[in-house]
Amino acid sequence: MKINKRQELENMLTDKQHLKLKSSIDQLLNTVVLIDELKAKLLTQGYKTYVGRGIAFYHMRKNIKIKGSDLGRSYSLASIEKRLAQNIGIEVKEQLQQQQKRQKKQGLGI
Image (cartoon, rainbow, N blue to C red; front, side, top):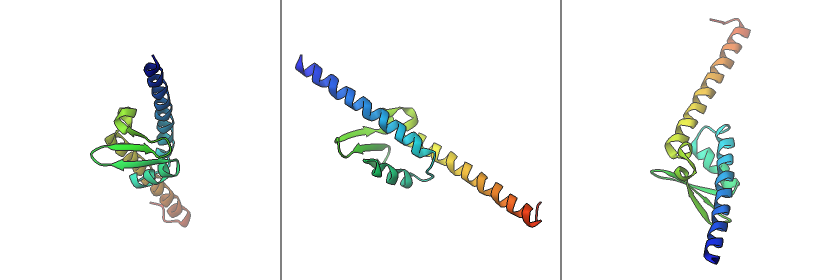
C-alpha cells in the first residue's frame, strides 16, 4: 500500500514538472530563434538540455530527466526545430518589412 501511495506521489510531482516544462518551452519558443538560445534560457530556469538524436531536459534541483517526446509530439526535437524555423521565417519577414519602410521613407520605394 505504501509503495502505491509513494508511486502516485512521484507521478504527481512528475506531472507537475511536465506541465511546468511545457509552459516554459512554449513561452521561450516565441522569443528564441536558435536551439542554443533555448538551451541557455532553460538553463536559467533550472533545466539542462541535452540534444542528440532527440532532446531531453534535466531538472537540476529535483533530479528529474524528461524526454521531449514524453512531453508530447510537439516537444520532440524535430517539432521544436520546425517551430524554431517558423520563428526564423517570421523574423526574416519582419526585417524585410522594416527595410522596405526605410526605403520608402528615403524615397527609394520600389
